[in-house]
Length: 296
Image (cartoon, rainbow, N blue to C red; front, side, top):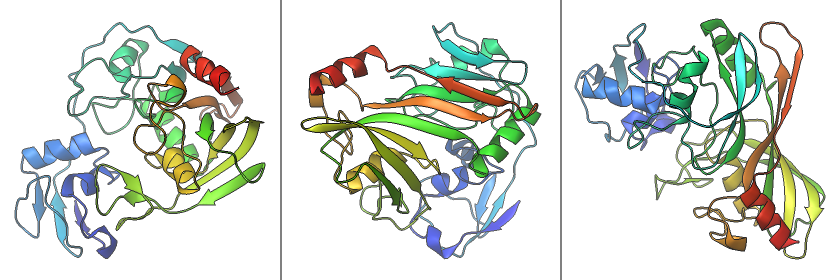
């Protein structure tokens, strides 16, 4: 596969750029290709940390399929919905969704391998359509076949996968509802963070409404139109409503929280095979209920 690096990607790491290419599928897959010297930048091999200048030509040797080497693990998981095509799992906070550097075992994928998850081009992410941050809890849909995976991705791209989150913010909104439309990407000064100050902006839209207004906090319902990394946390921080407990963009340790108050509470979509409506909900976990009670 040959592709041109757009000018907007100047300054971005090679592995991160490749990980966003659909045919590659993930940063982990990109790192494997780079380690195996299956990527050429203007005819030469580069390291994964190589910073793109924009305008380069990449030659990438992508395998059609690689069998997974992952082993199933027993994890205590709540399945909110399942049928022969897909399942919706209620992910607990602290659990990483898929294998990556530093997380070779104990991930959600390992715990779901016994549930016949399948689909997608990355053997280390079978069935995974979208993700939740490690510190975020709640609902996630996972495919059980190549066809279901492809159709779920189409629903995601067409914004027909309804994802609603409950989040507690430190501050009081000026209105009962709002819409944040601001492109985000890797921060130009700190690549470990996502921000609006970026050289690689990607469109991002978050809608929110106030569920409960408290003395110094507010419980919000946030609905994603796009699903960028850390989107809700970055967008709310940008309008001076930082997420309680968020150690990176918000107020770490607020109300005794050990992670961000962000929970995927509702997931709804037309079934990718039958067309029937699928509606799933997840109650707030105990740690978030305690923090909400403290805020009240």
